[in-house]
Image (cartoon, rainbow, N blue to C red; front, side, top):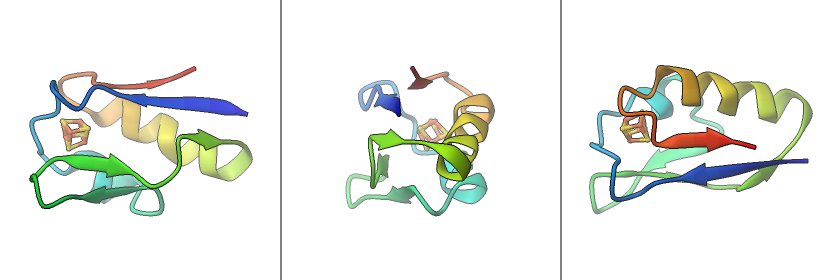
Length: 63
Ligand code: SF4
């Protein structure tokens, strides 16, 4: 299991993570992204790693 850590304060709400990994990332009413799950594995993990890679402010970490 990998852990998804999102620095909400640093998130600029660009939507890149929600575009590449809509299965786990959705925009909230605060216009910032929010992960549905914070513990993932397998195919779900890959999608979140891609989200971390495309985030322009590197506020998604996968551990
Ligand atoms: S890609 Fe990063 S900055 Fe953009 S909405 Fe997602 S978490 Fe926020």
